[in-house]
Length: 409
Image (cartoon, rainbow, N blue to C red; front, top):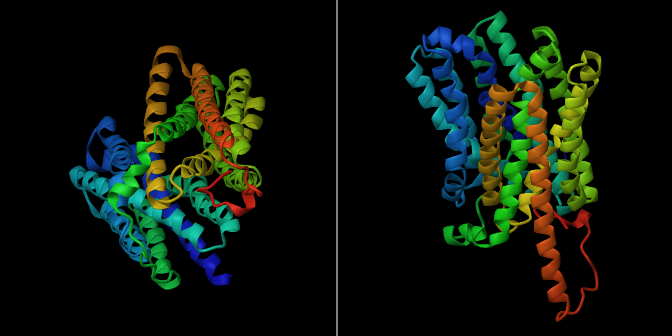
């Protein structure tokens, strides 16, 4: 049991290092632009290109890695992130840094997909959701501590120190994978056609659409966190930084709370998430101009926001239960597409109507996500009703405790 906990902790640390690499750059873009003598918009490519590569390459890279020992895949991917951060710290050329943003972005969805499937496979089926929740804890810890610490190191020490920090974290995760994870050869390799065949069913595309809409709902507002608190609530930079940290810390607690809810009632928890998003955005719109009320609302926002990752992964996983790595890669790719869509639409609204209207953008995406989920469930119920007319009812229904996160009831 102790070894299993160490293995899951190692996977979570790897996820923490990857999120710190992916999102930490956001807080140090001004320093990158100055150090490498490029414009702010050019430096922004380091963020946009990373997300685009993840969205495009995720399922394909995961398919290519599907027949390789999982330990080798995880170790290789995290080593690429460690080396890339070292390159960021050493290079003085923007084109080199951009190239080493593209390379780890290719490995990003592979690590996530395999890490989630590995965590679920290390424990009994009834504990699989708890294991994947712990791995997702690395994401929330990355937002809560990795990203702010990267910015702090760049501001108070040097930009190079910030990148060396991320390199060391990824290196420790690499050593942990080599030390604690056993060899995990693929016992039965599925053909590429069988895995891609998951996408042939029309209804999975409703599930995928709902995942895109959930992440658009989350990041159409969160992506402009500083602008909202600065323009609408009129808080200064120190308050924004403190609330961003509070948001991340609460995300850690919320992540585990949603994991517990999923184990208890997966479907209702999935439907609850966009409903809570809607309620939070209505609250943000109402209290946005009032500093004291907004300071209270931000932790509530963080608690709800935290559930999007584990809820969406569980929801999409039910359609790819036979191919969990490929299903997880779809989640990574389409969630990044949702982030791109949400931040794009949010940016348009921010420019045209001001930051206060961002809450309505998030609310609209949340309503669309909930409607898409309900439509998918209605189609499932119609099928079960038709099958029930000609098939005897099962003597025992599965319960959430007997399902993996890829198999919600």
